[in-house]
Structure formats: structure tokens, C-alpha cells
Amino acid sequence: MNDLVLALFRLGFLVLLWLLVLSVVGAMRRDLVIGTRARTGEPSARAKKKNPQLAEPEPTARKAATALLVLEGPLSGREIKLAGTPILFGRAQDATVVLDDDYASGRHARLFPQGSRWFIEDLGSTNGTFVGENQLARPQQVEIGQRIRIGKTVLELKA
Amino acid sequence: MSELQTAPVPRRNFELLLLVLALGVGFAAFYLVGSATDEVDHTDFIVEMSILSGLALLLHVLLRIFAKYSDPVILPITVALNSLGLAMIHRIDLSRSTEQSFRQLIWTGIAMLIAAVVLWALRDHRNLRRFTYIALLVSILLLLLPMIPKLGVTINGARIWVRVAGFSLQPGELAKITLSIFFAGYLSSNRDLILMAGRKFGPMQFPRMRDMAPMVIAWLVSIGVLVVQRDLGSSILFFGLFIVMIYVATARISWVVIGLLMVVVGGLFAATTMSHVTRRLNTWINAFDPEVYHAQGGSMQIVEGLFGMADGGLVGTGLGNGSPYRVPLANSDMIIASFGEELGLIGLAAILMLFLLLVTRGMRAALGSRDTFGKLLATGLSFTLALQCLVIVGGVTRLIPLTGLATPFMAAGGSSLLANWIIVALLLLISHNSRRPMSGSVGPTDEVATPGAASTKAVKTK
Image (cartoon, rainbow over all chains, first blue to last red):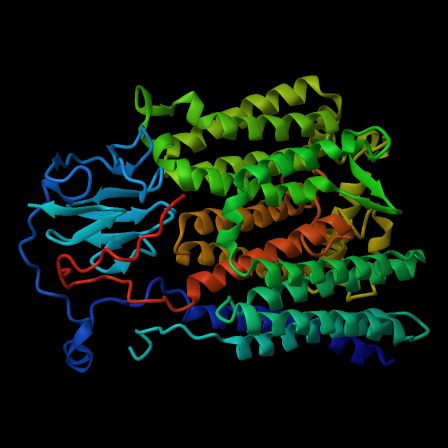
């Protein structure tokens, strides 16, 4: 084969390799967002008008939760003071809140603070953890007054 | 501004497109290798590439059925790396008249089929969580297998192979997967205990011994066995995996500090007391000393590899046109040097970019994953890939001492191919799980729950 053609082929191969790399990078570009809504910078007034969901919700005076109220279940009526530390729910003796409940798992769920907000995370329990009527699939923020259900126990954050 | 809302899309067609491009790279590589030799016989490579393409398409179809939302770039990148490796092994076969590439092709086939089986049988990575402790047991068994007298074989001074029915296997390669599963499973359920219970010494908090015991046992056994078997590369790999998993699970920088201190202490200990480690360090620092160069097991391999890469320069000598066969182990440990020589800096950079992209896709799957186990598993697996590349590429380029770890998907060696293809299958499953649309309406809920509506779904635990 002609040497020149072969040399061109070799350079062409390098181009092909980089073409693969660059198309992969191109494919990733739109995928760099995490979650369902990604914001790049502050949306303009026009963009806000077009997509109303882009507008920041008005900052409401948020009250920090101070206690956790047990509404139903074996510990019904109890109030647990919230410090800045995570709380572990479950039947295991080393849990922060020990639930004497066949429907709860050993280490069932975890309530943890982030700034002034509280999040609940299911720790792979058998029967799941529910906020309102929805079963948790990932850590989720809990608002004051929202009902959390773990087995037979129903909890609520109190301001 | 129009793409702000990203709804989950399968993107399998895009994967097909990239797959065709990746296979094109493979075909082109084989074509160049073939055309550099005098008698142009293309039947070999057409057969090899056809088998590879067939298996790649099979995996693609399986993904369409079982993991529709999995990451579209993982499979094409892997196929591209695998076919480049095959082409290079084939090329070194031609100048050394060996038959390595056929074996490698068989192993590629086996590895891809097992990856397909993993995709088909597992469906959801969360099923693995049930095997947390079984995974620990299996890892210990795998690591101990080569020590059994008649089964184990010693090759190049390391007793890490097992010979079964004519095939030599390296069970330690599979142990990195089972250990990742164990670490992920254990840490995802005991993270809180490790984090919260424990005593404080100054600014650092140490967990209670009984919370950490299974982890420490896993770590001691893997490191102990590897030191006895004289496999330095794998000990680095397992130790790195251990530190990273604990760091990711607990987000405490103190673990990294403790881990690095242990590396320094262990490294100094190994460097002064273990003869094979001392020799490795010497061949690394004094590589160009003639005495070290000519010594038995000296630096000849590294230095020849460096000369080869220097000869390659920016654009390389072209596939099939250089002389990478002069380097010992040019098709396994030193395959990166072979690529550096024949594809030059530009080609080698592209290969490293492909590895980097693969690892970032694994990390992306971890970020998007909805369960802690999946997060930790994806992190552990993709970190394993990254650390393997660092150790071997760093070793070949004399950044760090050379230790024998296989370049993922490229180096000749069946067990490494098998293990890495299983890792890819697991990453695909995890990414499917993190990208698929959520069932039910779970999300940032703004509405306040209606009281007393949900108390019917409970299932009795026992």
C-alpha cells in the first residue's frame, strides 16, 4: 500500500479516536444535571414569565422545628426534643427512639438536620417509611405538621 | 433555557450510535495492524471483530429490554477499550508469533456473556444487598484459594493464580467486586452507628470497636493474604477501596488522614523489611542505572517502555509500525507503553480520556442513585477502575513504582477482563436505577399530608 495513504490512515485513526471521545463528552453535557430541575445562574425576568416554575418561591419566615410529636403507635403522646443531632428510629436497642413494634425494622429510618431543615431517610426497612401517603425513595425534607409513618408509629414535627 | 427540565429518556438509540462508532474504532485499529504486515490477511481480524460486535449488540439489546434507562455511554466506551486492547494484543502476536489474541478473544466472549447474565439475572442491584455477609465470606475464600497447595500456582513471584482445567485464573480480581458489595452493604446499614457512637480524642472521633470489627477483619484479611502472596498492586487497590468507601459513607476527612498515615507507615515498613518491595523501589528510583537495568528483574522493562513512548512522540509510529514487542510483557502489564509508542501522546491521551469518562459515568450513577447501598457500590466499583488505571499507568510512566495490575479491558488476562465486565454490568444496572422515572409521586412535596389516610399498606415482618 502507498506509504502516504497509510500515513493518512494512521492520522485518521487518531481523529476517529478523538471523535469517539468528543461525542461521548457531547452526550454527557446535557446529563450533568442532578435531580429533575437544574438552574444555571439567575433566570431572567422573561424566562420567569415563560416558565413560572423557575421563579424562586417567596422566602417565607421558616420556623425551626423544636420537637417531634408522636401521634400514634406504642409511644403515642410522647414528645421528643430535637437537638442538632440525627435521630435513629427502629426496634434495635441502640436506636435513639426505640420502637416496640413488629411492623418496624431494626434500623428503620433516620431523621437528620441540615441547616434549619429536617430530612427523613429510610434505612432499607422492610415496610418502608411514609411521608404523608408517599413512600420514601430517597431522603426527603419534612415540613412542620407533615405526618411521618414508621410501622404503626405516626410522627409530626412541631415548631 | 429550553433544556432546564430534563425528563428521563432512555437514550438507547444514542448508545447504538456510539456503539457503532466504538466498533468502527476497533475495525480501524485491526485494519491498520493488518495493513502494516507484508502479507495482508484480513480473515483473522474480521472474525475477531465480528464476534466482538455480535456480543456488543447482544448486550445492547439486553439493555433495551432490562435496563432501558441505563447510561448510554458506558457500554460503547468499554467496547472501544476492549477492541483496542484486542487489536494491540493481535499486533504483538504478529511480531512475536504467539497466540495470545485468540485466548483474549475467548475470554472477552466469556466476560461479555457473564456480564449479560448479570444483567439478565440480577435486574436490580439492590438484590445484592442481601448477600452482604456472604460477599465477605466469598471474598475471603477467593483470596485464600491460591494458597491451597495443588490448586495455586506461582507466576512471576506472586502466588495469586489458580489453575483449573488448563485456564489460569486470578481469583483476587473477583474479590474486588465482592469486597465492594460487602463494604457497601455493611456501611449503608451501619453508617449511623459508626458516625454517632464512639469516643472523641481531640478533634477526631473514633467509632466503637464492635461497629468497625467486620470492616477491620475484611481489611486485615485482604491485606494479610496479599502480603503473604506478594501481590503489591492488589493490596494498594484493596486498601484504597477501603479508605474511599469509609470516607464516602461517613464524609469524615479524618478517615482519609488516618488512611494516608497508615499508607506511609505500612509503606516504610514494607520498603525496609520486604525484599521484593525494596527491589521495586530501587528499580523505580534508579531506573537508568546500568547495573539496575541489567539486573535480573531489573528496570529494563520500564526503561524500554519509556524509550518506546519517547519514540512514539506526539502522533506515534502508527499501529503495527513501531517495535513495542521489544518490551517484556508488552501485551499485558506494559500495554499502555505499547499504545504510547504506536498511537503517540494524542492516541494515549484519548485512551486515558475514555477511562476518565467511564469512571465519571460510574460516579454520576452513584450521585443519582436513590439508595445508599447503590451509591456506595457505584462509588466503590468506579473507584476500583480509577485506581487500577492510576497504579498501572503511573507505574509504566515511572510516576510511581511499577506494580503488576492489569490495565482494565486492555491487558491480556482473563480474570481481569471478567471482573471488569461484571463491574460494567453492575454500573449499568445502578445507572438504570438512578435514571429511570420514579414510580409513584415521590419528590419535594409541598402539600401538607391529610391526616389519618395512610395506614393500610403494612406487611408483617415475620
